[in-house]
Amino acid sequence: MDYSRPSLKGRKAFGGLEPYGKVWRTGANEATTFTTTKAVKINGQALAAGTYALFTIPGEKEWTIIFNKTAKQWGAYEYKQADDALRVQAKPTKTAAPVEQFTISADKAGVVTLMWDNTQAAFTVK
Image (tube, rainbow, N blue to C red; front, side):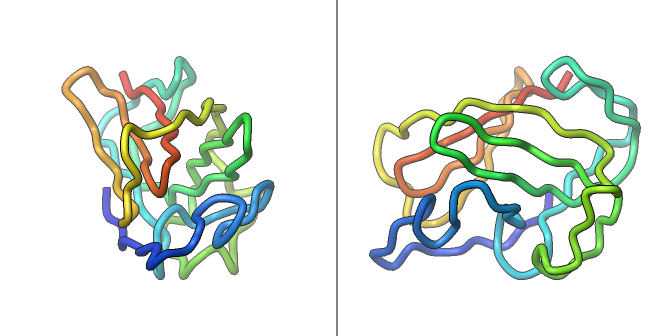
């Protein structure tokens, strides 16, 4: 994955800087990209090999994780839902401690976690 890291600088991330219910580029500047060299399953749903722009729609109780076929985008300004390859749902949870800089982590079990402020949302890649 390739992404820029926005920083909070004392501001609220979700429901603040990034409004609930709106498409977010899931990073800063250029859209974050997600690349897989073989077909995978994201939360049990098929995703073909390729490079995708990673967008999210944060919500208080549920997030939509979006894999969009147009990988080279600046922000979400040119985002088109018609170009989505896959959308999956994720339940946000609280982080153990606030995360100042947006962070994406992946573990050996294939769990990808998006963390910022006091919120995290995860999806599984198999």
